[in-house]
Length: 94
Image 1 (spheres, helix red, strand yellow):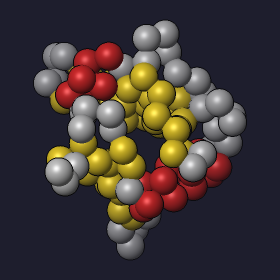
Image 2: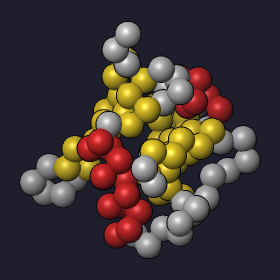
Image 3: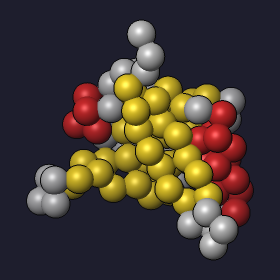
């Protein structure tokens, strides 16, 4: 299952608060089959079939393909000087 670093938790909670995402909302990660990539966006609630990861109030929704792809990974986040958020994924240490 996907885990989140402390930075990712803080960034996701801050983003949700800034955008007035409802309490049941969070960050949704889905696969884009055409582009061969992942999409990340704020969502007011998970979609049917999404895996929900909740860490200290930071909620991430993963569509089934993203959940499989990101299983056993850790999600990190950083904000640059311009306020741009970047998310990264790495294998969890064994």
